[in-house]
Image (tube, rainbow, N blue to C red; front, side, top):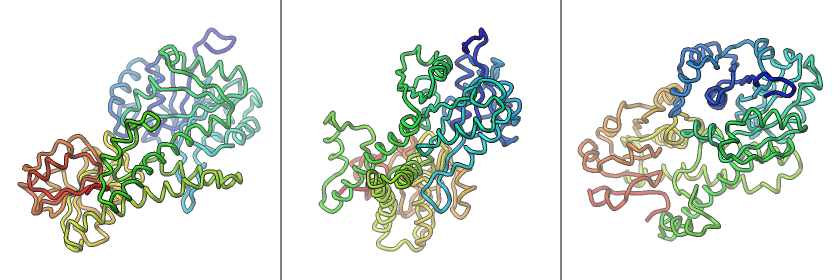
Length: 445
C-alpha cells in the first residue's frame, strides 16, 4: 500500500519495448493496476489488442491474462500517466550513440521531460533502463525542476536483469532485486511494488543511486569478459591444435570459475552486452578512471574477431575463395528463443560472406521478418532444408534446438557439398564426421 493511504499503488511503465512491455504485463499479472505509455500509437494499439510486438516465449499468454483481468491498458497520453500513477517506471531504450561508444540518452531524457509536467502530487519515478553512472542525479534535478510537485517527486533506480527468451521468469522470479534510493519512503514504495516477488524469496539489495546504476553494466561487463576469455583461449587452441571445447569443460569443474557463460564460439551480440560494455568504458574515461576498465576494449575486440574467424573457416572449407560459393546460413537472431537481431553475430557473418563473393541464403525460426527489414541484400529461405538446397557449405550461427537436431544424412541429401562450420559448438563433431561431413568449429582441431 502507498504511504498514508489504503489504496493499492498504481503503476505506469514508460516505454513499451522489450523491457517495458514485459514489465507492464508481469506487474499486472502480479495484481497491480498498470498503465503502459509509449509514443507509438501503433505499438499501443497492438498491445491493447493482445499482440506482443516481438517474440518472447510465454509473454503473449501473460498479456492475455493481464488484459482479461482489467488491470492493464496502454496509452500515448502522458497527462493520463501523471494522473494515474504512484510509481512511474522508466523503461525506454539507451542504444549506442551513432558515431560514439556512449549511450544515447535521448529517449530517457524525453520520457522524463514528457512526464514531469504532469506530476502534481507525491510520486516516485523509478529508472530501469541501463544508463551511465551519474544519470540519476542529473534526472532528479531535472524532474524536481519541471514537476509541479517539485521535491515531492523522488527518483529511484531499479536495474533490470532480463534474459531474452526467459524474460517472464526473470521478471516474476528474479535472482535479485536492486533498489537504489535516497530516502526510506522510496524504499518503502519499491518494497510495496515488488511485495509479491519479495514474498517469493527474492533477495533485495538496497543501495545508493550510483551503485544501483553500476550493477547492470558491471554484471554485463563480467559476463562479456568471461565469454571473451574462453574465445581468447580458442585463438590459442587454433594455433596449437588444442580443443577449446574440452578446455572449457575442464575449467568448468573449478567452482571458482564455473561453466556458465564459458561457452566458446561466435561470441556475444544483442541489444545489451556489446553496447553496455562500450558505454561503460566511455563513461569511465569521462570520469577519469578509463584505465580501470581499459580491458573492456580488448573484450570487445576478441568478440569481434570471432566473427571474422568464422568467415575464414567457411572460406577454408570452400577451398580458399568465397567467390560464387553457395552458403546456407542457419540463424539470424543474436541468440535462440528470440527474434532480436541487434548486433547479431549471425547476420554480421552472413553480410561479410556476401561481401566476399558468397551466395548466402539465411534461415531463422523467428527472426526472419526483422532480418529481411534490416538486411534486404541477403537472400532468405523458409526452412532449414530450403536454405541448404545446393549449398556448398553450411554454417550454423544461432544455436536453435531445431538446428541442433538436424540429421546429417538428411541435410546431405539436399546440399551440394558436405562442409559444415559450427559457429556455436552446438553439434556433435563425431556424429557429423561419421556421416561424411567435414566439420569445423572455432578453437577445435
